[in-house]
Image 1: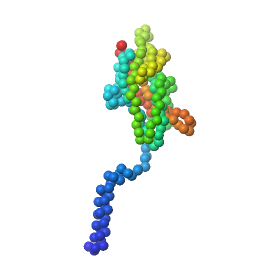
Image 2: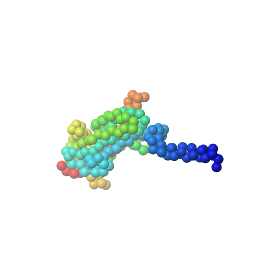
Image 3: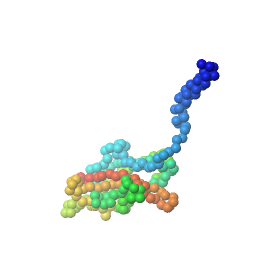
Image 4: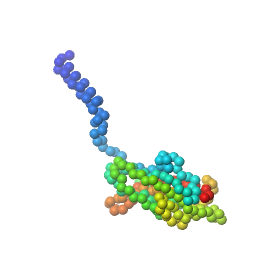
Length: 205
């Protein structure tokens, strides 16, 4: 082997070794183009895990959850969460299907939450809620009076749920719709995300 060939092989080996040593550091400082942009929305149970969600609801009993948002959109976003309640016959929002066909529930919002979330950041809010309601035995209905969230009381006197003969319960659905501020239209629009809690109102106080 000639001296020039040996030197070339030597420096090639040194270069490869240097790249191997530097690769962990380079992976931290190099910025790769992002190909996916999205928002995460979640609910966690009282123990801050994806388990032990409230289900069997007793009148005026407090229940705790965590509501969270993760921003992966590439910019600081302004979010609105609409808290709504529905029974088994009322319209639910959609989050799957063609973009043009996705829609929020037409039900009114009981409570709105707003938050600015920076890009690549998460936001989380602990929520404690309770329902005040009563039974109308004659027509097999649960009639709601109010919903309390974090010590704020919201009127639910126009809400009710009927007996579900299939599941043998009084079913209710507390759900959280995610909306995002659109500067083009200068308003919030439905962000095609929602999470929900299926609640059984059969338990007596």
